[in-house]
Image 1 (tube, rainbow over the protein chains, first blue to last red):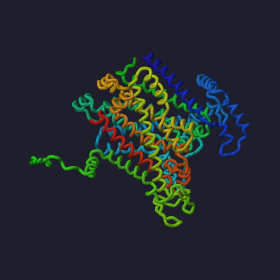
Image 2: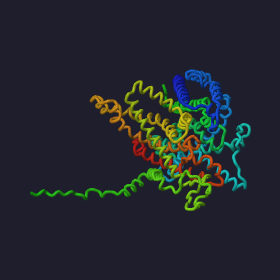
Image 3: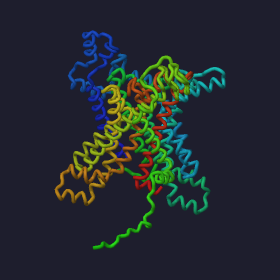
Image 4: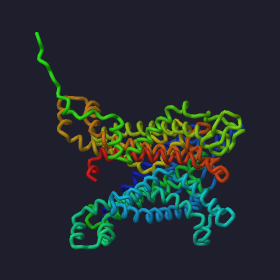
Length: 323
Length: 304
């Protein structure tokens, strides 16, 4: 088992290095750069001397192989460089936003699990009844509804609802406060984006739970349990659910990794100053150092989550043994 | 000279079903998939006949009729705003109809180009095997490590915004996903005796790949293709919403939700409602349609 874990961990390295090379090459293909955008943006006149100075300072005039070498050295020493737009260290810019995005991702995962598990189980237990159809429609709607639209609707609902209940409009706070400093303030700001993304991600998990449950409910031991007269509730909740959990855990784990990237859109709607928003502005401002650092962060989280899910599989199901 | 009379017994053949009867029986067997198909057809109709269906020019600003509620007539005379207007006085109904055109253009191009490239790569990877397969699969690993929207955004960062670039940004991440799925099916097909037979006759690799293997992996290919359609429409809407996709004044649903929609949401609730509804219904329809295609083609699911 341990050799397997170590082997898998080592196999992550080529993927990560490949991703780093890919993102570097892609970003350096671009004709325009951050200096042109910073000084010559919006059609204003730019001093060529100034642009050249700026490019020189950021190392954009170095030969491409030297830039690549610098980048790879930085990658291995965890030195992410300096943002080309704000001139702050990339690591600092990420660090001040990481807590917010992580918390929203965790809360959204939690929301999606508490929606998905009961709905998936009940939909499988009552297969092909109106409950099943209702749940399936609800979950397909969740996949179809863009999370930014759901966000807009939620904000509208809060505005109209508060107007009707309290007589004056209420909006979630805009300023971020850590959960450990002011939990009420923190939750009243972050619960909405968590609901909007959580519902969307619950859709996939609901479908997964349903099909996993359906498969397990056809197993022989479930028939045996029925034959010995166990009540259906115990069969579903104790015998079947435990064995249906494996694929569901995979989905939840992978979804969590997707969430970190999926927040790009939600943070825009709720005006949250998190990693997703940082990413969008880095893309619009042609801030390469920031873009590549954020892409690598998301890729690393994604790859690591996949790895953890694999390990968890073996840990949860004694029948699975890797060699 | 006389010929023996030939009579054809016709009463054993069932009466030919009309299109209406056939679609009715389909609707009974696959209600959700049928509904999805209807949405897809309606959207195609909207997209193709947009100039004849739209009552107004979708790009023409009209400051006399800003933020007019649904169902009002134009101040300028001679017009009826079915779904109201936006902050520039543009008719929402017309913009939604033209938006279907943008969504379909992006969705179909990205899904078809993406899955066809994936099909070619996947089959080639399985057929040639060896180092070619190994290296290609490692490259695909790298691509698959990027979540869909992150890859799309990275490509937008490189090539910029606009309809053509958005199509590219959505197509590229589709290719490895389709290639991976097609490869696993093609690996099984490669071992079939008829492939050996084709090879022993001396057919070229290209012929074997396209004429003998590719037609037999059509099921996973179509499943991926239809799944991509809804995904591409949603992704285009997200990118446009972020301001990194289709650009003004081209009508696109995601774009219609950006800027004005949030700002005027309180006083003009129709501005954010209708474009979002259009995206949801379209993606819903394409997903149902895709699910039906998968149910019909995937033998493992057929029994359920």
